Amino acid sequence: MLTLASKLKRDDGLKGSRTSATTSDSTRRVSVRDKLLVKEVAELEANLPCTCKVHFPDPNKLHCFQLTVIPDEGYYQGGKFQFETEVPDAYNMVPPKVKCLTRIWHPNITETGEICLSLLREHSIDGTGWAPTRTLKDVVWGLNSLFTEDFRNKVDDYIKRYAR
Image (tube, rainbow, N blue to C red):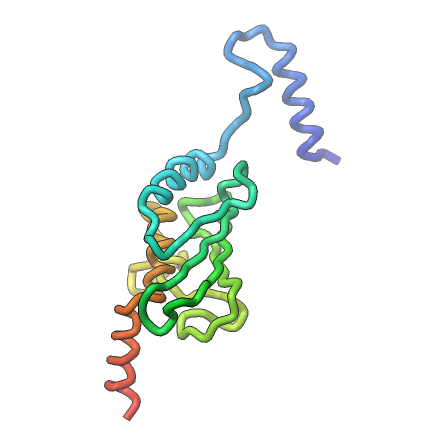
């Protein structure tokens, strides 16, 4: 049976037997996802909303991180909401997987932590779903917008319009 470890050992053995100056043991093939994440994480950290904090449990795995949102306005002011984000290998053709770890009543978050946000959908009827041009910054700002004052105004308008 072929395992990843044995394949890497075999590939390293082949590299060592070559006399090419361009090959070295330290060079590894880097996925497209990881190349994109290096750039996007730097952009994300530079443009992070003041109500959000990003934490990477393992700094070598940029595809798994936690986001903390601490709203400073609206219904959820003073709350602390944790989200777990996992970026799949097929990123940026598919959206990241985000789950809310904090139990909360929110119209866009289920009891199990699944999030209803159009930009997190691979296919969306309204055309505002995931596109390869979107970035992690868009995801973080989208999650942050679930807790802003603008969301409260939308809820109030909905209640006035439909709850008679």
